Image (cartoon, rainbow, N blue to C red; front, side, top):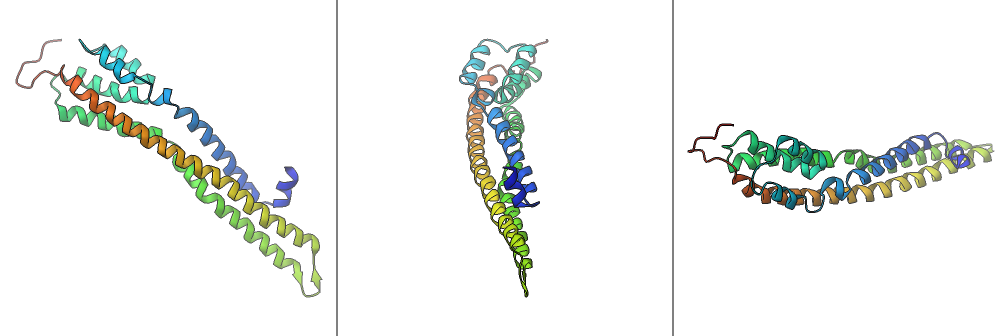
Length: 214
């Protein structure tokens, strides 16, 4: 491997940095986008069961918000009803939408970085190819070529092209996979929030009625 890096020349180093960055992002996103950390099964049913007769305490709501990404979205709605008993349907939906946007931003973390690496790696490989071609043409002199410089130029051109594609193709595949996963999670969170809105509104005090003292 060291011999390949030496043969590829200095243009390979930016590609190696990109490969390390892409691998780190992929591993981090594989861990962070697990179903258990984003959309635990039956969490909505558990929240509905928990709030069937009364609203939970703030400590319970905090634990719900810390449990997962979906939990944070659902906890925002429960917290809004607790803090504002006269909340209306539109205000509650707006609370869920705000929390949902924050959740989606959290799910999309580092995806732009991965997409940038997928786009930049072939260009970096192309740059190495151009540098290798320059060395090849530089080795051709009227009095005869330099075989060592010619071989080095070919190595730089081919190795960098191959490395660029080897980094770009998996990075693009994982980027598309993570993007589809985030879109699916976003849809599921919207459905969960829509399901919880009418349930939480049962605890809202009608605007024409006086609020009970706490």
